[in-house]
Length: 183
Image 1: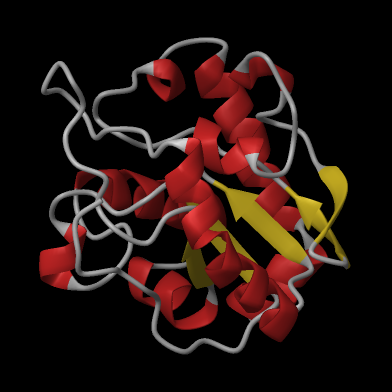
Image 2: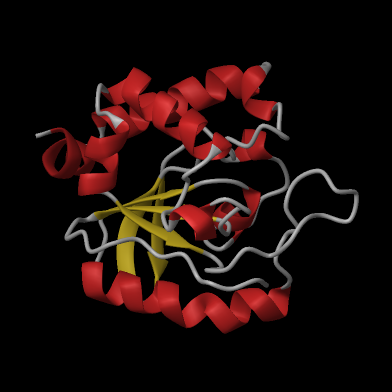
């Protein structure tokens, strides 16, 4: 993993987005989802909820499975997925964030983030669904999203496209999202 760690600024909210790890540009820009994947993610939110990137950043806390850029993948396309030791080394950060913020809605983005909360085989099993989860001694709703990376095409073709639309509608209609983010 490559320093510096990337963390969200202070946001008092009951809505948390959990990403995998920062990409190569995020340490330089010092904010989560600051580059290509972020542009796509914020486009999804604005289209479904009417809330801009600035509004999401001001009212939603961004956590991550790992806090530092893991490096490029073996084949050079995409970022390397953090290994179990790296995930374990960073887990105390997310635990502390959950204990402090006590979220009521958690939105994990991508397979690695989703797998921290749910066991599943394929994204089609979890995208477009809401789950009641208990983790870190706290109960909350979980609405998974696919990763908005340019490397992944899952969200651009069926059934991913329709399932993403369902997930975004669930987020847009969630009472906690509306109370904390929209209003």
